[in-house]
Image (cartoon, rainbow over all chains, first blue to last red; front, side):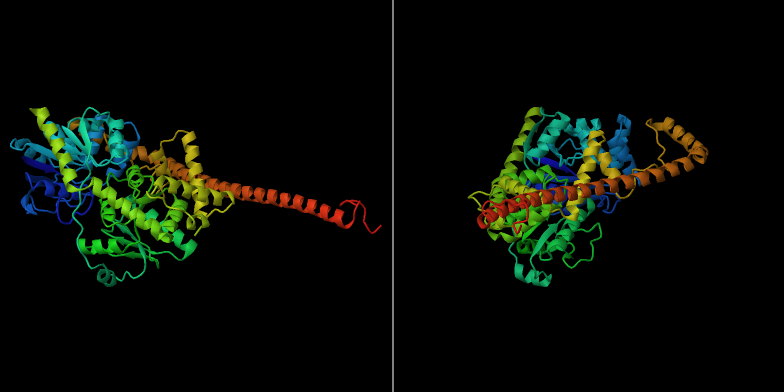
Length: 390
Length: 181
């Protein structure tokens, strides 16, 4: 089968998020199908500035078609977004909102329309213009991976077609499915809760990596984009308050792309962007993983933690993460500073609980996120699209 | 670490819902005893502000913006000029609006600017008042609880004193005339 993935960004520098999710699925599908990628030349999701050269590229043996973004995101986009999301707006204004959100890339859409040879298109992230516009052209031959979070844009009527047009939908979690079906009323569109598999765990020398990175004290770990919208500022605040209160807690270690300043604090460390091997070692050495983000449709780093039998503490305001913790038994969650303090306290002082939670998380991961299970579900979704077309 | 966690038994399967319930109970117990952290008070005040906003049926996202430190919610004379129309019509309308704007702002900027300062002042004042009110309510609850406890202890001590007096001075009760008489 010939499958074309459509995603807003694609490249080695893009780690985590829907783009990495797409890359994992494409890589796995390429074992049994002819897979290509259609994407933009951008590598920054806020400005959409063209960075990669236009044209064909090969990444991990997969052909990548890149198209230039024609209009970068306007500087006053945040104001427009606020007005659209919190007030009355016409359909024209909403369309402008989607276009300005970007990446506005008409070349990519023209390319999709010429690809009659493709059996199937797989779109990632409902919110972006490439998906919004692409589904209008080839919706009946497509699967949508919405990666939706509990935010207001999904409520805009302009997105209704995005959730009704695809042949099938691959949801990331039962919570995401429930949210989308409730808001958009698309229960008639065939869908499955799929998620993604992740690369197998690599063998690493944890001790020497921890020595190299000077991680000799116990630490709680955050991996991902370090920015306010991911809840990092709140995490820093919660940690510092806890530190003041007890003075005897593990360090808080950040790893990933930093988009906000971190305070100078005795217990807070920033390691930068880590290689896969170092990331694995740092995860192995952590007491637990902490995920303060309120907006997640599927946290791959949580899956990585459970693969490594590490428990997690996550933001309970995120329905998906809370649901994952409750179903798996692999972590605790918090909704305020007091709960953060109690959860950290409990996790720190009860090694037996940590171990049990790590094991529970691992069992849940193995039962739901093995590649053979994921690919089986994608086969069902693909067959549904093909059957409906024929 | 609290005693209850030291003695907490983990079953064969981890029940996260049960642990979270216990965590919330532990926090509530502390709060009933008047043990509030500074951030606990701040959170309670924030929750109260949210409750007031819900009563007033303010959009929660708008409220979030109202509470953000960047004051982007406030009146701003530098609004964006746009039109819901498209094409040539839209360009003409936007150009016309841009031409008119300097004249309009000549009269409105001072008023809008002053109103923005007043808004900011009242928002600041109200937030601090809610926080102070919360702190005082907590202190009041704590002091009331303490007064009740002291009252109970006093009653107990009075009873004890009477009992002891009966044992030492049979036929004499506490509060009567001086036993030395």
